[in-house]
Image (cartoon, rainbow, N blue to C red):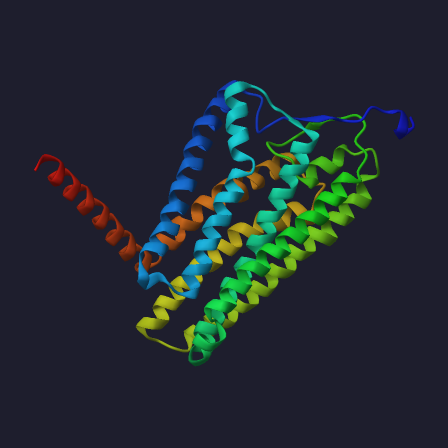
Length: 318
């Protein structure tokens, strides 16, 4: 049948993670708690860094921006999924679907560059400590963050432009809880093999290349740390280990999804949940539990809050 004669798709149906009502209620409760924990955890990390002058350094400036991106990444689709489980309304307009694709690739593209900036920061701090202050200046940090957002916008625009050129003329069931190109392009009325190659060339290879660069930089850093046995080296090792865990958790699912866009929908669903819901909540947990400076700052913030409450109570009843 000629594509021109087919009706244009105006909305998509998000099939979600399961058709079971029991599982849907479980997902509603679980993801609601995880989303609130993500927002609270990352917000607390941002407030702690801003409130404690000892954390006003390039590494924590970049970490604060990572938390902001993680909150954004957790918010582009999760609230709608939670609402859909509650209301049973699982459709999304065509424009809404394109918007989700835009913000997903904006935040993931920005986070990729930001993680590379954090790797660069640790590389200079450990391998070239005498030149750290002159190389990683506040101006450079701001430039790195701005560059990460510019790259993210450029990447997301390329994905959106590509999605808008696709003809959708029949099937409209998206076998996921949000719109992304690997699942949406398979509904297009064109040969998906060519589209799969586009996926691999744009998102897959970029993600894999960035991961290889990050992996090599952390190997160099770890080798440098191994050559020095001191308390400072132990601290650097802990910080870099935390960084690499975050990098692996973020890049692993992305590489798998975009390097093999024709794989099982079940695998894609699991990995999508991992990097859009679990990774954003794990970042503040990893950085706070493995970082003594952050834990100390959190204790100070807690004591300051409790003391201010005590003073307000005393003034109220005096």
